[in-house]
Image 1 (tube, rainbow, N blue to C red):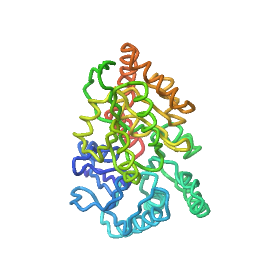
Image 2 (cartoon, rainbow, N blue to C red; image 1 turned 60 degrees about the vertical axis):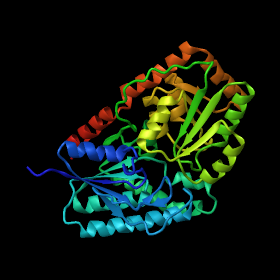
Image 3 (cartoon, rainbow, N blue to C red; image 1 turned 135 degrees about the vertical axis):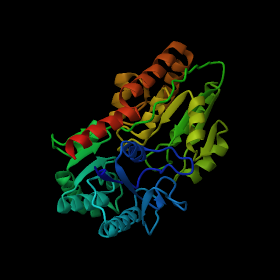
Image 4 (cartoon, helix red, strand yellow; image 1 turned 120 degrees about the horizontal axis):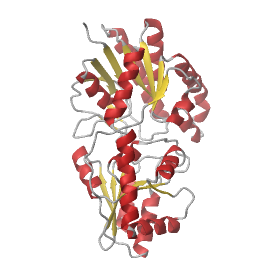
Length: 384
């Protein structure tokens, strides 16, 4: 019996090259292939996180041509980049000799999702749209771009109305995308099983914080320096490690000169990042107040490592951290209040251990790669 062919279409997540860890779609690619499916992964030759061209051999991936690059996430350049990628996808479809049984496309981008849904409707191919971010809403904060988004909102309506199945990374993302009650489900971001690390925090020694992620516009990175300054004023020995790259890297390089306890490590491969996570005591999730994220990668990464979380993101993450006691929500707190709560946890080894165990336990129950993939596979079996 011939294996079913699945196209995975995603341009937003880092590819597992140069030592990068595999993310959601790449994990699905490897696991689907292991289960006997034929998989074609369509991506791009431009890396979103570090805003640079990918110049290595993308063996096992189909590279769609971006033609132009962009520096800012919320920009006309990014929209044009997505337009050219979508045109490249159309040409790939025209040239392709094999019709897939299923397409799983990440939303955003809006135009890639539109092309996939149109192709599916005209060729009787199932299309699953996987909601990863709230587009085009995130662009509405830009005065110059927002007037052009009416067209994108019409596309959004069409995409979710006519997709075969709507997936999302969180419950509220799913309800944002569609009012349909059938052929919908959420599959959270996930990580492979990590052997539990017994975390010990000695108040007499240095306390390590980690911020891991792309250094983009949605993050309030100034909070990192305010926290370090306050901890220093309160005589708490500490280091804050910033792991990542992005548009704010240049300004951060200037800032760290004045703050010796803040260490800018840049982009790390999977192994080096895991070393930093192993040595950390707290994970920082410092977002701007209007950031649209639900349950971001950062949340799952910290949970999987049993790291108590210091969070400024509103919405689903804040609700989960509060209900499951995963750390400290600082949404409306001053930096002094935040620092005092962190010090309380530092000085209470029992409380720190309990919160750390809460994180790891929730990860095992709901956010492992094995459980996420099992849910996806069951949906594929039932609907394709």
